[in-house]
Length: 496
Image 1 (tube, rainbow, N blue to C red):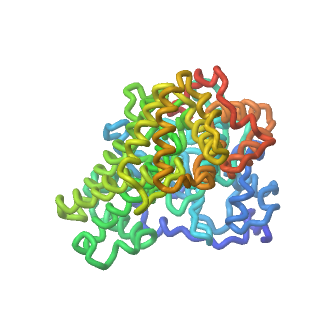
Image 2 (image 1 turned 60 degrees about the horizontal axis):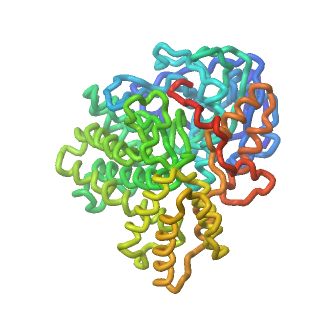
Image 3 (image 1 turned 90 degrees about the vertical axis):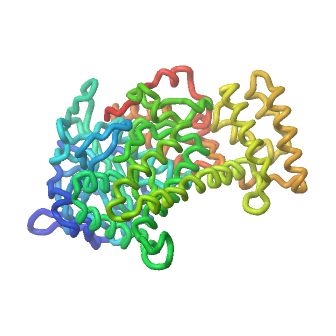
């Protein structure tokens, strides 16, 4: 790939750009121009994502691209815009929202939309500054790639650039821009915006756009009486169920599941006050701003269904049949428990499908109760269990319990279940399902502290293990250790 600069100073990356979202019309967005960052510098870069996009290695090393992805230079062929949407925040209708600091540049030839997050004011910034800070940008960068490494549907992150420009939150911080990608950044809130405003033609335009681009199977056939919009709702519900099953199985807390943070493609999006569980506490609330515990870990599936109801209400003018809309919500209700049980069986090395047994649910529930009772570290437990099954020795797992009697009784049930299938627990499957590494809060915090001194080795090293979290990486063993005592005092909130 050859990068060139034209006579207008635009950077030509040699990529084919299009922006199908801009073709929807100006009711859906406002054209904007990214605002420059002073003296930008590279903070973190995902070379693996660059390879997936077919980009040459030097692409992420040039000063020209650094300037372009910091908002200082226009990329030839892009059409920067900010989209408008609305949403429910913490269960309350918030009215018009929109891309307050995210600017969509366009779609690459690989069919991925590219956004700059933190690139300055848009008409939807409300009273904010349109900027992102270094700490939150590093967190989203690392977690986006960590989720991808775990096999969980997510937006992706190509890079973070930083600057010493001040940004004011609770204290003065420094600015950053995150370059992120997804097949689409359309959210539940986009549909809510037009439905609540009574703009049903725009609602139909948006729904048709999403169906034609991402859910073509919703058209034709006799699914939901041939109603493509009901079929769309059902398909979104199924993808959302898959995402939630992965979240709950791996111990991921999103922290702020507002409808404007719910992807129409079932992608994990908008990494704000997220957290991977340390000790297993089903009612854990990771968002310091969530005073009522609405988005507690164990409430996430119910919140997802609540959000899908809001999407159903928004699509009702198109579905035009309340009973059909309610029927289209059933796939989430039926799919989530099945998908979750399948994920948990894999974590236990048990077969799914026709080989699954009804008692597996009781086995899973009793184990989760034990983990909660003893506040056992969730990630370490599953990884040690995987090795314990592989080695035929559960002693290191047993050590995690202050009173191991309960675990001993459960282990007996577990091994009895294994005997029922000729003693063949799938340890290989377990080691490919139970990660050794997740992005714990304290690991992100240490990398952020280091980055504030312009030392980005912590970001790079974390990215290395998070991209392949099921590998052993013995040189980074400290990233798989128990969290230090001070980790419990870390507070994360909606402020970013």
